[in-house]
Length: 163
Ligand code: ZN
Image 1 (cartoon, rainbow, N blue to C red):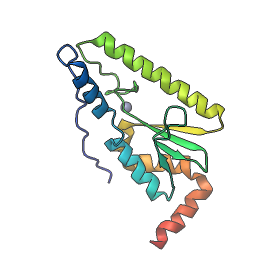
Image 2: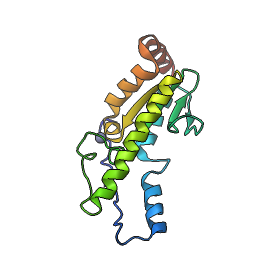
Image 3: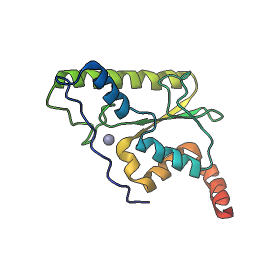
């Protein structure tokens, strides 16, 4: 489990060639709702015995995983689309650079606003970056701290040992 397969490179549409419909399809595929990083996070949350709902549109930013009882929400963000401060996030396509930079800046601003709105409403949000989902062990530890905390960790240990 520690060695996740390398994610495929993000396809970057060539905007000067792609018609609008094609561009929209490509972007929908890239920002799809069932991405591999999301599946990794869901699997870990399941493993921690936590119940959640997906993509609640009634919450700011439509969090990817929502733990309603605990008022906790997780966003799983692609490093490129959401401007992560990592190698992949820093990569900007050479063509239409201004377009992409503006788009990503808008996403970052929107993400920040969603986090603030959630916190203002008494929620505890967490952002998991795509690049973090490659180290499942470290991510599991992080999600355990976020979802379960110290007391809950013992509870999960008991549940796991019963299996
Ligand atoms: Zn990243």
